[in-house]
Image (cartoon, rainbow, N blue to C red; front, side, top):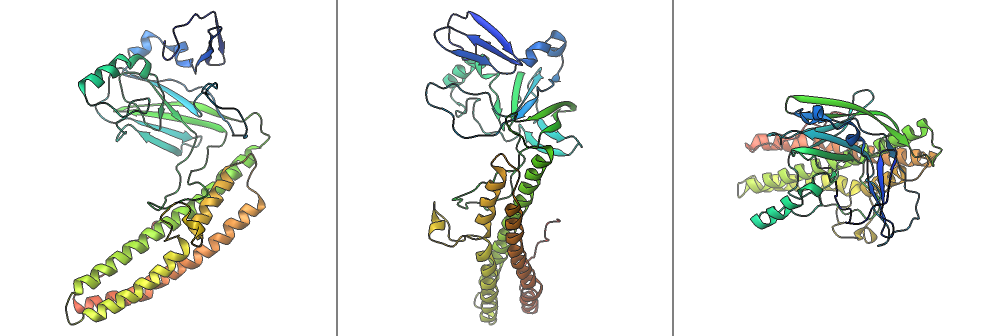
Length: 376
């Protein structure tokens, strides 16, 4: 249990809620966060192949600004709900940790599969024999270091911390974001559960998320903020899927023009392909910043709906108040403009693309494949 506690004289110990506070007198205070698993630890637990401890209540803290940092400041406990579980031996298949709402709906899922090859301090995992020995020597300290969005699946005690966030919206790969966030909404205070799936074993434990005691937000206001963020995130996802759809159609149009090669009908295919490609590009250019490929590029090019919704997303997520009336009006206004472009795209697919595919069919050239739109 030494972990990163210096080899120093300890004169006072105090347990505050679920944390152990150690005073070294003259050096610093040291805290072991959330010792609740130690309170129930017994041979009956370690004899099990899998055990999931009941999480302590988590507080949805809100950044209020200010504060003091620097080298003299200690590290605060990890933000979120701490999930501790015991594995008698390392599983041979990936394990899963899920967080559930009170109605049983899955809020977030994490898995040990595909975890980055890093040790629990965030450093790259070592491949050399010497480095592996060094890691083994530090195993006692590393074994209880909590993970950040990576589920550990190693024998013994494991800890995972959920930061209370839901998945963010789909985003355009490589897009530059000058202002705003693509984070998902934060869980509202209330009753939740954590589910651990290890092979054939599935264990579930309830836990509570408490509101920041410094705030006066009501349950309805927390829910309004959550719903507003979901609505904005859905629009960001819609734009992303539309951009990817247009890019896929443009790619196919270019391929059909290339496939025409030097055939007698090549010019007809190229002309029709070029004309439709320009119309598709006009839609894409209205919903997404096609030229923003570098930091602060939006200073030189017009800001489009994609960046506007991302900026709006940060506004509804931050702060200690529910979304304002203006937030709702902006969401509705931007959503109306997006719907205009979505209808334009649908019209191009129904008429122009259908006519282009009819031409290709007549010439014996493969049609442009139009993927089905996602449900909802």
